[in-house]
Length: 268
Length: 322
Image 1 (tube, rainbow over the protein chains, first blue to last red):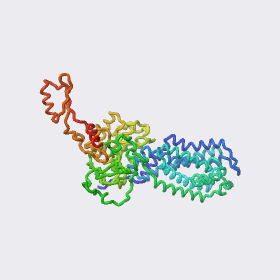
Image 2: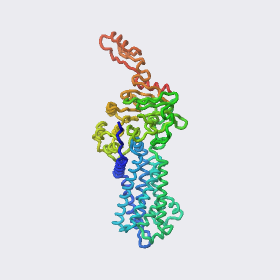
Image 3: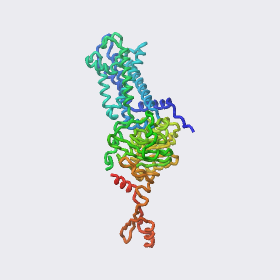
Image 4: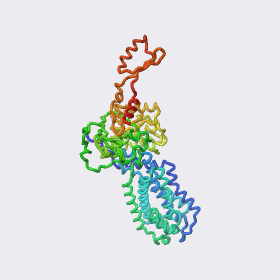
């Protein structure tokens, strides 16, 4: 007698994708926090702040790149760090680890969730940007840049988020740790104010982390090339954007592979 | 004293909690089952353990434990917190790596158990599944999709008595309903071996009776079960055999009625005579009651014959090991 075949990886991947989408979009707190927060930021800061950026660019046009960065970081880094740590603390991960579900299926589900949330956030922000502030949408090959910068940035931040979830003691401490970190990184990366107004040494600190490069890549999409002169290097440095985000993906992947745990440290 | 007795339950086993998931090392002779000075592993048993050792730092939480659990049996593992119960079970489930000894669970070394092996297990953890936005039925359908031959989720809901909660979100369930959901998730994969870690904690008496009926019906379907519990009445009601674990070793394995010499221990006969409550300890309670009956014209007033309860012998046993 041969043992019945286990379900294919593809089938389990589909199940996990469905589970992760339902878990996210049915939870009001996560939807408000992750999806609506960038929109509220856009509306609130767009109404209050009025930087003169020159070249006929108003603050909302500049802020589109920043707020989309915040949206992507929220959907990936913060979302992963907080929710995976929570699932580790409440026993969900341990319970899954005792089933024949392939470990990869868990991560595939998470990636699908991040993609869906990021795309929904970006679409919502573009819609509000166009309707409320009349921002100029990207055109031509800018869409292509928009796509690869977003995907690469989201990938790096997802992997980092998974790694951070493991460093956190539990779900609550993950939330308390990663939210301020994300806000500070966003602040010094020129998300909420023009990057050239960030002090030079803070710019250097920001340049170590992926958020700065994600924001810079997105600025190249939403701002005219005349404004590239405001960047530290005097250009958009898209090659460096790809390189740094790619490196962070590798670092994140190695960190995840080395540190990922299915149970809290010191759990019974 | 018994290691760790009186400490809080959570974290008392401490140490690492690596999930053992992948094949890595080639088997050593020891891992193939040859443990010096011990019988070979029993290939027909659902679970066979020889000389199991698990250390946390200098302390051996499990220190040379031997046990065979037959296929189709319900085995209850009893023992105070910190005695090595959870550690042992987590080694069997594949959650922890052992430091010594040989272990086979359904013929497979848990340290090398892959998806096929896990598909034959059901694990109901103490912590249970967390909050979920999915409905009870959705959770069961998702879990069922990981297995080769799952049970029908609706049948499982019927079995655990959650049919009327099928559409309710996981997080909205009461404590007892959640525990039943945990059991449902544990059995939906049609396991041949089911681990139940303190499954009825927080149940009211009626819910416990219903749960016991569920466990018996699973036994009738041929499922082997390893139950850990603090409720001795539960062990007595369900288990074919019980094992008492103390200081990382099995102190005794017996059928519940014989544990600790219970079956042959003196019985206590009590009755009322002349308005006074009388008791007598006797090794031959039948003969004693016959004599007693002869002294009274009709019923012996308030007659009771009792043996030491499982709790009595259990407490004495873990006391002896202190």
